[in-house]
Amino acid sequence: EAEQQLRQAWLGRKVVLGASHPDCLISLDHLAGLLRSMGRLTEAESMQSEALDGLESALGPKHPAALAALHNSAMVLHALGRLREAEALHRRALEDREEVLGAEHPHTLTSLHSLASILRAIGFHSEAVPLQRQALAGREKVLGPRHPDTLESFNNLVSVLSAIGEHAEAEPHQRRALEGLQQTLGPAHPLTLQAINNLANLLSSMGKHDEAEQLLRHTLASRRQTLGDKHPQTLASLNNLGSLLRMTGDLVEAESVLRQAFIGRESLLGSWHPQTLASANNLAGLLWAKGKLKEAEQLQRHACEGREFVLGPYHPQTMVSLNNF
Image 1 (cartoon, rainbow, N blue to C red):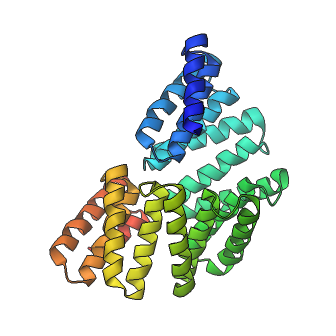
Image 2 (image 1 turned 135 degrees about the vertical axis):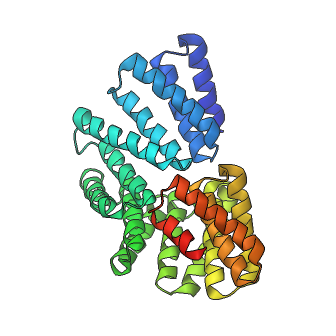
């Protein structure tokens, strides 16, 4: 229903105002953002690129609407796994929003938060941590501690703290974020489910496997119901559950779940997307443990070559794959 409404608004403005009118381009930007949230990334990228080019031409590259489209373009590139391209756009959006809107404007803080997220994905944790803390502090001050954006920053701070092994600090932050999101947005909202997923991954890293498995199964069931089987977040839940099942020794179910994640990601995102490569790495490790060595070697080789090409030879995930190979 939301897609139909946004598409009608865009097409209506296109007919009445013309395709290059700023209001038409803003509608296109909004539609592209919705499609990205639905996992329809190829369609979203095409629309987002058109909206960005048009708004920069019509209003200038530093107009707030053009900067919003720039940020959204970086977000779709992140979702597509084109991390260094996304980083460049996020840095530009942050710099220009600080200049035009000020350092404490909510949109500037969103750019700060997003830049920290992409740096975490690339593996630049030492730069990501202080930026994420800055974004969280800014959002708490400007928006309040219970605002969804503030709680999302808590979520991301937990992820980067977990990545560098700071589990003791991460767990209370994650439980606080989850409680706030459940109260503010409800138990089935995508941000709430992401918080549950993050808590489960954190607990798994801490060896609390029973609670982690319960949370991962809940998240998977909820995402299937609300987002569908083929949404990137649903596939992420499959990958996380399969990885935990492998860790706890349930190799039969783990293989089934990890295959679903890998096949789904390869179909939706492509063979060279970082998430597909992560699934290839995880499935290869499981197959190796089960003695299926030929298939394991093929998948691990693909993961190694893909991560080295996409992420670089010294990215932590590339090093993991090389170590496993």
